[in-house]
Length: 289
Image 1 (cartoon, helix red, strand yellow):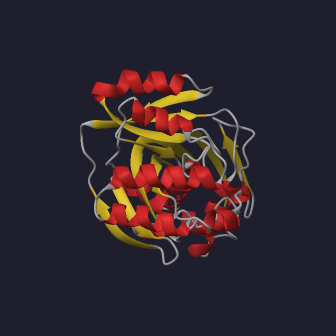
Image 2 (image 1 turned 180 degrees about the horizontal axis):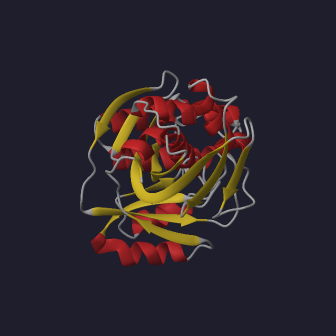
Image 3 (image 1 turned 120 degrees about the horizontal axis):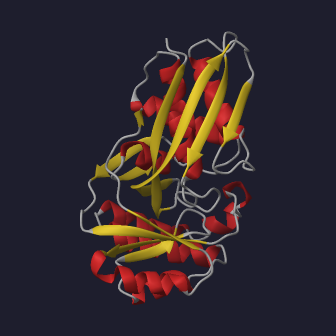
């Protein structure tokens, strides 16, 4: 046992938000979070330094480490010092929690010199997200897209993968990221569930392999239900984007476009206040470095 390990997990974006339906879909992007875990001889003492956003709550990372230690019956033997670093803005709907949980779970298991299968590691992060109250659905779809890459369609309530598929090589992703944060746990879940029939249509589109129409429909529906600005997505579509819609519970908007329309789509997004992040699809699994 080395007692220290670093792991990397990649980002994800929404195709179908699972809040209304309990089922969802997401795809991997090459944004990332690294988590370095060093075990200590102070049981039950877990200190966390979120380098890229020091004011964010550390509870999710703490819970993730605790669950791993408990799983191996080692909570009374070790504490941990954790350092995370990320290029994913927190609390914008860009899956920062799922990615951080994946990286932390993976690095904690490695620091212990243990092994778990991929879905066990994902489920640790989902459990930690529930315990830290950073999720409504457990975000199993986001966690799977982050961990495995590619596109995934999932049953979040039963934590099962329905389908995985590869993503095309000729498209990229742009995110319009407003400056304000919106925390998932503050979502008006009952209001969001009123759009369930339309989200079901989006989910059926995803099941048929039509991910981009599913993303757009899902985004417009959830934007309306949560009073978010749908003009950003519509403007991106008008500029030539293949798909555009609210990412997670927002406020970020995910836009899928070909290289041909990148400049026009970027110009449409730049009309609105916020940061624009460009990313590519990811097909790599999360890994210990």
